[in-house]
Image 1: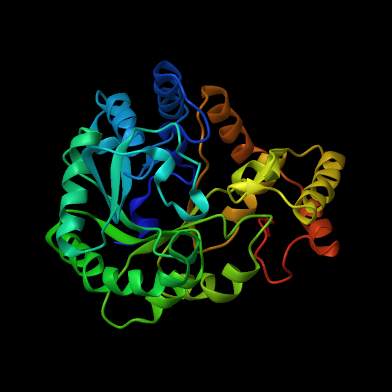
Image 2: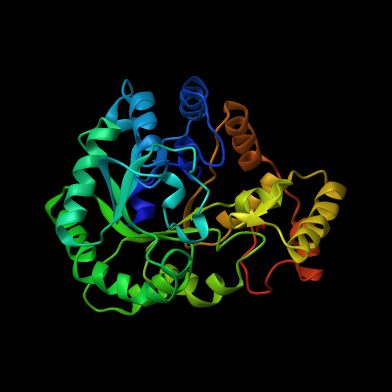
Length: 337
């Protein structure tokens, strides 16, 4: 089964903020946010052990514990094992994501993409999520933004370990699908070129968005569509930059990015369109995209996302973006025929 066969809704819930991403989120607020997502009809929830050293999984597990398990889909990640041992959070080497989860749990995070660690990661996630089924498993962060020049070596470890383990788990019915969960295009491109592993789709964060889509459009989207797989787009608002935030890709937005946002917003304002609607609907406009999973840590944000997905955007808006070179000329646009 591909991701498009499995995922029940085009709009999913990205749980990274539940791991105290950038701020210390009260338990009640985290719980209310998941509840708001459920009440708004969202039935796909993405998580990872890395998000707050297990905190996001624990919070989601508690929030969904009373829901019928057959009514929703969970994806999580492998590649990190969370220990009971406590560590100094400030000493963690997390690549470009250095301070993102500094308010998370202090449990030690071990990067391990071996076969044994993959099985352990799934078992631990099942406990934290309080469930008997993980539907989709993504191999997390085997890319340059986390491992720098060593990423190919880490990828090779995953190829020999995690990829084989997940192929076996999928074939045995332990999971329904697997793929990579990354913030870079190159690992997906590399995996698609391998003959052995049989992924079912990918989670690509920040690389097929209104602000940044050229490389993905050229290097992986056509192949994914041709093979009938699916892409889950994470971070459709580019770390908040698209919707007025100060960050782009976990760092302060550059003047070039801020200028692009301002130009898009000027056009959106003339058409009376929200930037969230433009961002979500652009990502979903590509036939390879199975779902988008914006993150949220407040219930009000959930309602905004649902409204943005349902918002009607005139075809002329997209045509003007293209005419102003604000979207790639080859990008499929959500224009009704």
